[in-house]
Length: 152
Image (cartoon, rainbow, N blue to C red; front, side):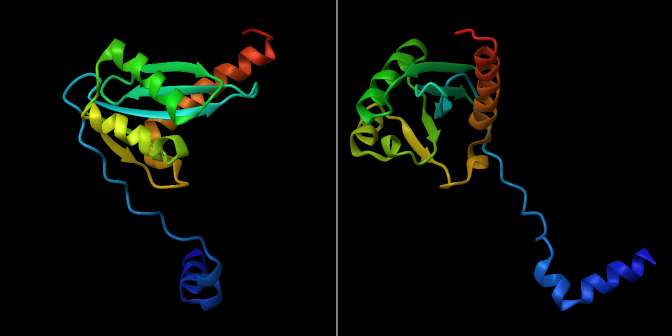
C-alpha cells in the first residue's frame, strides 16, 4: 500500500506542484589552508545592548578573535582589523557577507594595499560562510546566558 501511495504522489501533477523540492546539490568545499591565519572569516554580530561584536575565525585552527564596538562604520572596521592583524599578521584572504562596510571603497582599498584578497559570500545566504555563523551562534548562546544571569 505504501508503494502505491508513493507511486500515486510521484505521478500526480497537483502533488508535484505542492511537494517540497529535493535537497540542493552538496556545497563544494574550499581548499583547507596550509597554515594558521591564512584564510579568515569575519562578520558583525549584533548584541541586544545595541553594541556589536566583530568576529574573526581562522579557517585552519577555528581560532576566534572578537572585538567589541558601538560602530560598524568602514573606518572603525579598518581600525579593528589593524589591531587584530597586528597580533596575528595579515591573512592571505578574508571572507564576509555583503555588509555595507565590507563593500565600501575605503575598506577594499585597505585590503588591496595590504595584499589581502577579499571574498564575499552570496547575499542573504548565511550558510555560505558556515564557520563564522557557527561561531556566532555559540557567542550568542553565551551572551544570552550571561544576560539571563545578569553578568557582563
